[in-house]
Amino acid sequence: MNAVELIEVPRQVLAVERFHIMLQDMDTMGDRISSTFGSVASRLARAGAAPSGPPVGTYLPTIVGFDVAAGFPVDPTAFAADGLETIEVGGKEVAHLVHVGSYESLPEAYAEMESAAFEHGDELETNEPMWEYYLTGPDLPPEETVTEIYWPLRRE
Image (tube, rainbow, N blue to C red; front, side, top):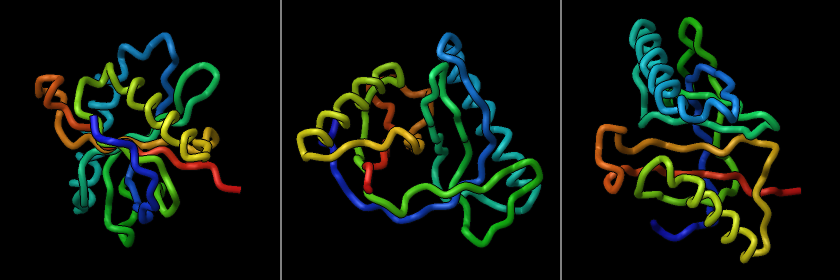
């Protein structure tokens, strides 16, 4: 695992579909997000638009689970394809980490991000989603899986 960085990231527009996942259904997250990526990619292709980056998921914790938006970065001038929503991430300071390892070990990466922010005298934002770019697919062995994580810092 690489070190946590506290950095400013540029704004990026995403074309996404949203869903909610309950805590007791977290074991289905991989299948759910995979099928959502496929659906978004198909809708973008039908609209003549192409992703401008790797798949991305945003996650906002709720009391009973997570509100998820899954899709791809797109050209900011692109329109929303049928059934897709455009949202923005970035344009702010974040804790950033490149995680190499299984998806199941992502909670450890998030704990590391919390510790690093705390040690720096910062707090992580809990009222805005964090987001993950999936730089490799789930078909690789866990030790080769790369996920880039961003978690906004709280600024008043």
